[in-house]
Length: 360
Ligand SMILES: [Zn+2]
Image 1 (cartoon, rainbow, N blue to C red):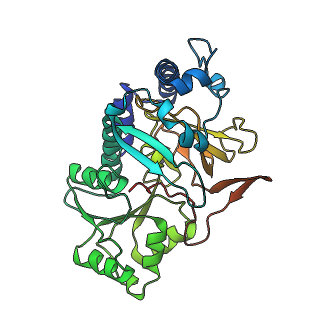
Image 2: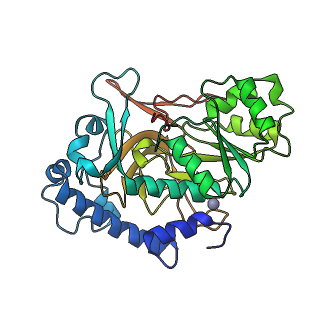
Image 3: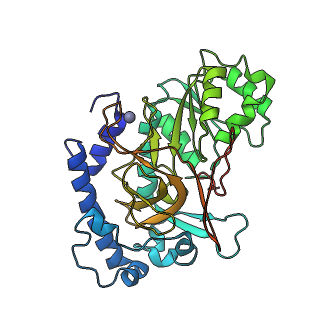
């Protein structure tokens, strides 16, 4: 756990492990899953019914866990209250997610103070990869209301000794470029589509060479073409982050080796399943990302289908971290009456029905 791998030290600390290696982490995750399943069955009417009849020590293995039913966005629409394991008074933030084109109830996510604090701390540690104390970080991401994603990121930036500057609402791309120049921005945190819009501006060309060092992209799939354009135009290092409102915003982030996103393994257990059959796929094969929460007391998620299409990357990362890596999100899974369709992100921009940072 060298200082170059701050995420390793953080995950070890949150899991209460003195050493972080794959085997130890894996054993800890299995026991955390067992605890989550037990807690959910004990406290939530939804899970009590859904997981009735399981042995007390379930899951005995990860293969055993993969037999549990998958949780769908429909469950979050209709059953969110019944998934709660604490009283409504213990909920710090309720996020309501409306999906365009979908009728009926919106999805609801309940986050407690502890959930939000854990995300805040994950953002703080993650940002040390991109920024240094004293830097100015320009935040374009949505979610500015208290405990929204951008608000948490701003607080995290302050905690690591840098200065957050929030982009004015509805600012035009040329105004944003002026702000980057004027404020001597070292790091920008934005949606890929926001950065793509900035790069369309003629003023983007001479900008920030030498001052703008890094860009955090989140909330949408990151097209490889966009990454190259950023590097060619500004010479800035791109760090992609993967997160959903359902995961408490933060889920995984790139290390300086830029070979996939390292998972936030003390809080999330990730599986990849066949989008059609729901069966577990081996490492390296693309499929649907399924997440389970490991330390969430308020509204645990057990095997939640994200609708995102990606793969877990085999082998160790060049950085030496034992944290598993998720590959770049390759598309969005659309379910129609005729089956499953994978919608690929388009070149230079990103299409996603439901951005991760859509919390108001
Ligand atoms: Zn790495």
